Length: 389
Image (cartoon, rainbow, N blue to C red; front, side, top):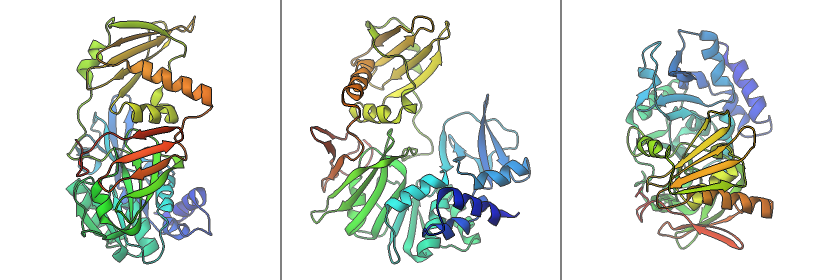
């Protein structure tokens, strides 16, 4: 397979010859790290491998796309040819441009000791090894198989980083001050205290916040906390898992959301796909973490959206196709759609939401606060040990 020409084309797309990441991209055979992956179809996910649909398999690793490698608890390596799998993606090879965005925010340089959180296929680890050398790189994943497969495939392309299996929000390998940089390829609800302990004085962490598009960078402060900001770039990663799959969705509550509800109102705004409106989605997730979103089409062809929460709150909105009137039904202890409308009004009033460029302050015990005067918000989620509550 003539992969070098394809990796060079990928490098031209996502970096430039003067960048320190040019050679790592050109010289990393991503296809070795992703021998099989899933593609979405109308009935579920099916696997693509080297022996079938070879042209598609060979080209995809050198396109700037995410390749899903695990659905629910099933890895693509273990799927039967032609098998249809249902469920949500639980691991992937992230699109290369986003991997580089996270690594660039890490400000890596020769001699830097780096922890990559979320080994996945090992692509981000491979790029970092090529840039800094394997001895400087440790990578961690909650899934033992992902670590085993990545170790073998990284060895095949000449890299031998330290690969560890463990909970990304729990104790980290190496002890206190083991790393100069922590770059996470999974999202977390707030900064785990274990990350603060693992960072050397002045060390830097890079991560995304769960259920948002926000990239956080923060440098360790002398008191053991960290300070930084919300970067202007946007990214969304899968949340850090503590088990083989994510918790099941709120299907039972979704059935309830088909009823009349306790409150029926009109909204001034048309229905939107909240998760495709990254800034609004991020602000809503910070305000009320844990909302599950679904979209659909009404009998009249109009747009519909549902908001569900584990506390029993739900909302259903329908914008009619002809009159463009939005009717909202809500139930449970909170008015979820009212929260969304409040954020949309703020966006119209101010012309922006106070996220990009917000100051990030992390106390030594992991309390994470975002602020951009006059707005301030302390993140929910996680206990003092940095583990999910």
